[in-house]
Amino acid sequence: MKTAITIPDDSFRDHFNEVSERGKRNWFYPQKPKGNWHTRRVLFTILILTLLFAVPFVRFHDQPILLFNVLERKFIIFGMFIGPQDYWLFGLTMLSFMVFIVLFTTIFGRLWCGWACPQTVFMEMVFRKIEYAIEGDATKQKLLNKAPWTNEKIMKKGTKYALFLLISFVIANLLLSYVLGVDELSKIIHEPIADHLPLFLGILAFTAVFYFNFAWLRDQACTVVCPYGRLQSVFIDRHTITVAYDHERGEPRGKIHKNQERPEGDCVNCYQCVAVCPTGIDIRNGLQMECVNCTACIDACDSIMDKVGFAPGLIRYTSENAIVTKTNKLITPRVIGYVAVLLLLWSALGFVIASRTDTETSLLRAPGSQYIENKDGTISNLYTFKIFNKTNKALMPTIKLENVEGKMIFAGKPDLQLTATGMVEGTLFITIPKSELRERKTKLTLATYRGSEKLESFKTTFLAPEE
Ligand code: SF4
Ligand code: SF4
Image 1 (cartoon, rainbow, N blue to C red):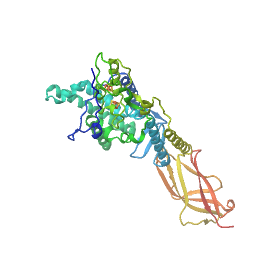
Image 2 (tube, protein in one colour; image 1 turned 60 degrees about the vertical axis):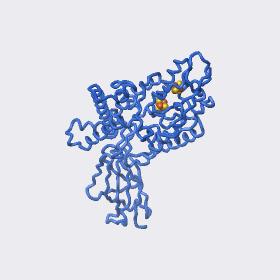
Image 3 (cartoon, protein in one colour; image 1 turned 180 degrees about the vertical axis):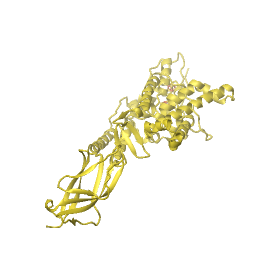
Image 4 (tube, rainbow, N blue to C red; image 1 turned 135 degrees about the vertical axis):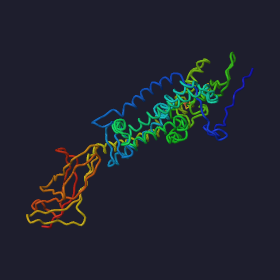
């Protein structure tokens, strides 16, 4: 007896699966994932969440090791402070980070999305787990949503959304601990809320955003909002490792019939891979922008393969090239190009870090001013100066002449007390004995000190009458 072979449906190319034919949102009810890959992801999630919550409390040299204060343009990356004056350092760090992301994605696809992105980690491993625990698996959730508002439904929905709100509040605090630091954030606990109203309102606003994201937006954050997801098509190529369906082995797909010779491929068309997908796609349609590489379909398919007695791995981590040619090629000319660019950027970054100083001083002759010949045989020049503190701590620097004997007299009361990332400016006279000056224009070398520690050297010119 002949077995009918299912011809793959191509209609997925004509519509966006997040939206129904009537223009409404398709709400997905993914089945509870289970299997080896899911267990690995659970373990990895525990590690990621532990790190995520612990890092804001880790301090190095009395400051957090990571801080992203975008409001004040102050960043701390693994203990290195980057302030508003460090535009080179900031620019190169961001550029290196972006090239690294492109390189990583070219090789490993959306590995980040499936395993470490906070959106996926919280959505699939925290919020979705709560939903499964309270409302049950996909079918029960669908039935509950259609059911009338009984006491049981009110209890379940009420508990679920209360927990969602509570966790959104925790995530809002977590986010702000990376932006402002735990010290700043904890003030709201120890001091009156009225003294920190903007911070309090910020926490509430972010709680609302996270609640909206995890209770309603969900998969659309990855498929519609996230720019990284939308850029996948330019990052990945035939050699990129992704979660992929082995069409060479699986097609043509067809139902399994007991005790019959099978003319089809290994896909038994059970749709289990679709049923578990949190973004509602059919991985058998090939690489799709909506796939966040969550591995749920690998586990679902492996369990079916096990049941029907076929080898696992019909859906697995592989590349399109490996499926077709049976060989994996990770190092491609494109990858080599990205590595070369990244090495160049890292070298430049290393140089900027090595030559970075804690202060940035400029000392320029006052515009339009000339030299002054003093009665005691010395010459004076008038200067304006600016000192920027590039550190995250208060600083009281001094400026010294390095290559000639002379005096520096600050106009007004010299107060070189600099706040963290602060700036001080003023005017000063440099007075040098005529005997020290051999030319009309002498190059002066000066230095900024913190106590006896030299922070930076800089140069300026000094004018004197011609001999
Ligand atoms: S296709 Fe598979 S890996 Fe991709 S999102 Fe769906 S279940 Fe996850
Ligand atoms: S789970 Fe595996 S066998 Fe079932 S439809 Fe998907 S690819 Fe085919």
